[in-house]
Length: 99
Image (cartoon, rainbow, N blue to C red; front, top):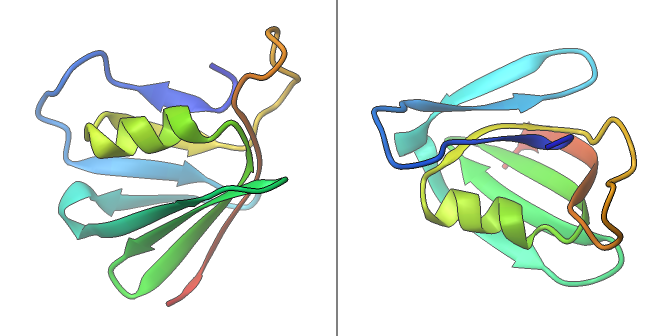
């Protein structure tokens, strides 16, 4: 996947990584409190983590949301290339700001 990594099953993972242009931020899974998937063009995924908000912007974010729902998301990053299949998940921006 050009936009991230998902675990094949539930395991002993303890963190999820968000890869930004200038840094990589990891959060313990138990700090992810809430996420909200907003329809639109582009779509948004808002993730409350501790005292911060991770904002993900892109297209077809359902696969990312399902990975969060199932505690299988390992890493999320901006897509580096166009998806091979039209309509696939594309992450265009990830930002982290105070909640």
